[in-house]
Image (cartoon, rainbow, N blue to C red; front, side, top):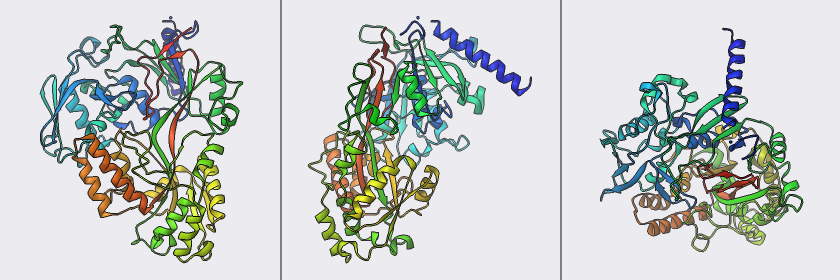
Length: 545
């Protein structure tokens, strides 16, 4: 059959699959199907490549991990019902549920999904480290797990992970979608095409996927979790994911109730929807719901700090007083109010976002707007009122051009001239990874719910990424390493704060704001609760008529 013929056949099959699912019984049209849009599309449904939000959201619906986070960022059981940690903090023993089954698939005898065991966990984790797979998640275990026997199935319901050296955040790491459990038979049956033929233990399973059009998932009838009344989850019959690339079209579809929620508010229509104080405008109240939640994300500007590089050695930015002047020289709160419509919190503490339990603005002092202090620092550095300073080039991406221009205008008032250069994200990432960007816009989104993930950005033994600034301070490194083996949360949080304070005094970055999860949600969507990782949680969502 020709390619065109195959496409027509697949299109008809996709349409039929959607119709069958939607005929199951939210609205009389869509029959309890949750609908959202993924502007960037979904590249794969193989958890070994769950490197961005679009993939993680979909993977989270199909698969489970040993542990998971709740809405308050606490680590709670999932496939593992409990776990033990050895006295030396090196061996983690997980006790698995005995009532979890993989979704039905042709790879299993009779097409019926079999019970998940500890051997599946060993296979799934080993696959992440397999160089022939080239998983984008290999970094989560590289240099951390034992090199001889990192993963072990003691019996069908007991799994062990062994570390090379203590790394307390490993439990948080294991909540990542990379650590989803997959069945060997299905992976081997489909090979590289496993990306399109997912099979997990999660609340939803694949029905159809037309890559430029939509994806449809249906309820997994044998999903193991139940609510407090003993009702099997999920409540939804399915999920439909559209792939509309235009944000204006997405917003129109939402207005017409053909989408159940929108993630983030596009700058082009934020003033239409939100007041400057971040509230819904009066003409939208009652029609849609605005849902916000502190996110484990920080937006910042970074300075390259490795003075062995000519780019740094020949720049005034090697002087910490100049970098501090940048930090004091603009008003973050005004920026959040007028440009961000109050979506976010001015980052006037450290690099660790306010959503973390270890955040303490009293323990970590950052930079508030203080132009007099900025001028004093410039004078001390030999550049009174900025005289003698060269023009500094700030690399940013189109989405943040207005933020960069605002900062440039503010800093100009104290004699610092910024030339904003807007480049594509790929070029910015390339230049920062190669230490070719002296002054750049950056952001850090939590990979897992532990503040260590943010401090790792400044650990001198880490390459770029994540250490894009090439920051190096032995005192910081010592505290960072100390935190990795500390079991007591309160003690570890204090170490994090001390390390964050050391780094922020050295000013390798200009923290801008701690971000927020921002959703627009239809009023009929119930039990739809955000979390700091902005992980789409649909197991308990209900759609009311």
